[in-house]
Image (cartoon, rainbow, N blue to C red; front, top):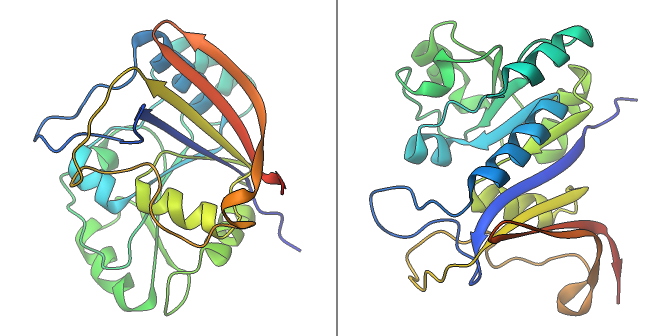
Length: 227
């Protein structure tokens, strides 16, 4: 039986729960010290996953930035960079995005109808795999498990965080809460409306709370809920 990876959801959000504001520029929610914490979590992961919408909007490189951490990964017998993964139901991806041209290996998880389109668009830039006629997170995690991924860091966006939380597939949640208020209904939230396990009274276990300069970092265990 395939062992699925340990799934960590990672996000920086405002006090009122937003991942960004509605302006064309990316809202800087975190600070340098917290960016370094995120880099450490990336270095400890076997794969990093973002959704196609986040990739198109933010155009991230999604790397382990510290040379020392990359060296430590190689010394431990790992590739310098974790596997980079994205998910898409439509295959609407551009081969020009930074994601494909930095770091190590890349993987696209998609659905049957979008496989050929995605392979044609990327033309060898990434391995492209279908997880069925409809996107199935269980099958997606099984595929990662078969590839030896033991620790998966998920960096968004909100739709993916919502799906994994509502399906009880997240093992940890890492939240960096910035001292900002966005208040724009059209901006992206960390989580959306969903039927979450246990309902509105189920309390998650807190694993850690600490201040990182002006950001508060909180680590939750969402599967450890009590009514």
